[in-house]
Length: 93
Image 1 (spheres, one colour):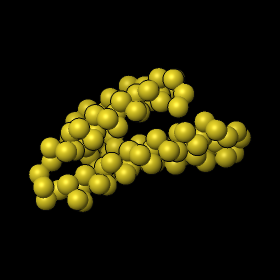
Image 2 (cartoon, one colour):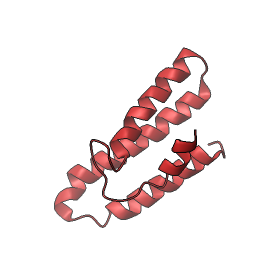
Image 3 (cartoon, rainbow, N blue to C red):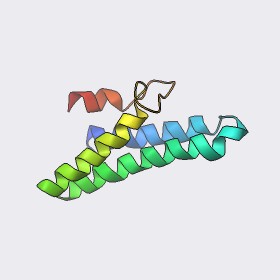
């Protein structure tokens, strides 16, 4: 994985998310937690794939990544109740 801030912060966010979702109530762990973790992993996958291609393929992967990230934003459709550490890096791009 590249050592640029986006990839490093994404990795850090995934570790942070997994640690925090383990504390969710048991009735949420199988549904909400799985959805959050899957969306975050999909975001990471999309940015890694975008990094490996060029041109229109890269744009498509970045659009997919943007959609996944929108679901993770505190003001997004899913409305995470905590600050997302990766947002500071993404806003600068």
